[in-house]
Amino acid sequence: MRYRIYPLLTGHFTVAFNGKSDIKFPRVKDIPSYIFLIVDENGEAVVVDTGFDLNHIPAPDSSGEREPHQEIPFLIKQQGIDPLNVKKIIQTHLHWDHAAGIKHFPNAEIYLQSGEIEGLFHLREYEETSFCPGHWLDRLDDFKLLEGNQEILPGIEVIRTGGHTHGHQAVKVRGENQNILLLGDSPFTYEWLWTIVPEVYWNEYRSLPLIDKWYKKRKSANPQLLKDYTMIELQGIGDVQIFSHDPGLKGREYL
Ligand SMILES: [Zn+2]
Ligand SMILES: [Zn+2]
Image (cartoon, rainbow, N blue to C red):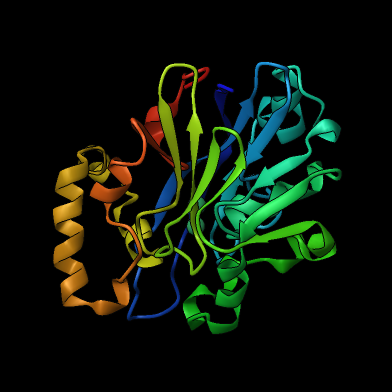
């Protein structure tokens, strides 16, 4: 089975991490937020991540923007899929900007790493507002907890990357022309994701070996940044790696 993968832009958000003098993160502005619709040759669909809720952007002075044509059900229907017929969601992780749209898919099973749930019990203080259990608490019965790498369907496999969150996973998809790795927010840790999101770093981000070197240097300086996969390792897993907040996806109809 081969799949076509649609990156769907669900809006932008700006997060201001302010309030304390020992500020860890810069203000991150107009971050594009993508979810991914994977459709097989028979029209069956799998959704990877479910986007953010315009009414739930954590942190003061934060905001989101969503055009009417960026509403999640609209985007899915536009590709000929009824959200009610989506049977499988894969969550790369449960951050507020990735898991708020689960409600649009009431008939779906939700695949995530069991480590993602474990991690919720050991959050660092500044991470606590990054999760909004209200987005998914009523769907716990639909959670399918995975232990590490696993095939979800022929040609769709999850790779546990850790790092960004305890149970973060990427999704490898056998695309029409090449293997595509949907990275979610990996390989960055929570801290480094937000640090490098400002646009000036995007070209560096796309230069994978450079980032890997950069990452290793910091990792050895700070063992807290340990994660399961390096960028080079992730690069070896698919032909193309796609990040959930990459402005470069703009205008791409499918991958
Ligand atoms: Zn995240
Ligand atoms: Zn994110």
